[in-house]
Image 1 (cartoon, helix red, strand yellow):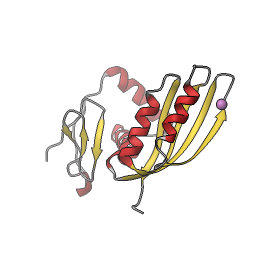
Image 2 (spheres, rainbow, N blue to C red):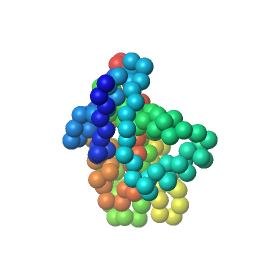
Image 3 (cartoon, rainbow, N blue to C red):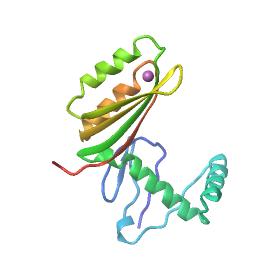
Length: 167
Ligand code: NI
């Protein structure tokens, strides 16, 4: 059974037996049918970090480590391939950057169809955290995320999302 690997981590979609990346089709053929073995090239510096990670997690084999990493990848990106998602977008920004508060508010007002609620926490003198609870059309949530990431003053915008059931 063939098995391919990717060289670019930019996921476009995921379904039951393949992940589609930006530049090619990839992987997972047969993983639902009892598993598949494949070879993976890992650069030396990354291998060192992976082994360190495995030790700290108490994972004894590289196979198990790769499986855990792939599960994490699927849970991180799986929502992107689904029609509807729900969860939180965490945004950390520097509120001293001129105009960032207004820009964040403007963006949110453009996504009333997917934003359920927002929590604002003042983290320190400069940084604020927004926890934006979202639910709805995944493509709209992706658009919201990319708009947030594009704002000057936003330090990070990270999704914590799951596939949602249709209403
Ligand atoms: Ni604040």
